[in-house]
Length: 228
Image (cartoon, rainbow, N blue to C red):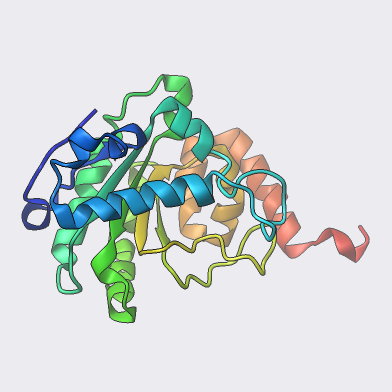
């Protein structure tokens, strides 16, 4: 799937490329030249970081346990934005467009959970730019949750703690990013940490999800080391 639109900044509709397409010189050459390096940087970060293990992760496996399989299924899409700090409406329009395009990523029903869209915002790397992106993300959270999706934010100096090692900072990236993916059953730990996720999570996984939420709540408030 190749979605083309030259007026990325004006209408908030980014060109979304698969990992394969980012590496296709013929396709990448059709993009605005100042955005080509952004697409390539995101693809490289996905491969070298999300699809790799990390000494500080606190568990075995890749930083993101889903990304390598998603890459094999070709269900990852990458976008790039030249939005500036003053472009809040453009950012939100772009993400809403990506919500719509998310459902169009070809995937078998059993593989739908491996779809993802990652959008880079190279012009928002300053403190003011990241604050702008954070505001837009917050304003979109209810639209996101009603679709059964998660909208995550990565940034160079993210202070978000890892689930397995609180000293690890898993949401760091070379430029600010927004990532869209489906809520999955394994997101119980995220839901306990961010209660706004709980209604959408339980709607999608009512029985199994409730058990996982209870388990994660016990782990959070009744740690194993107390002796029970």
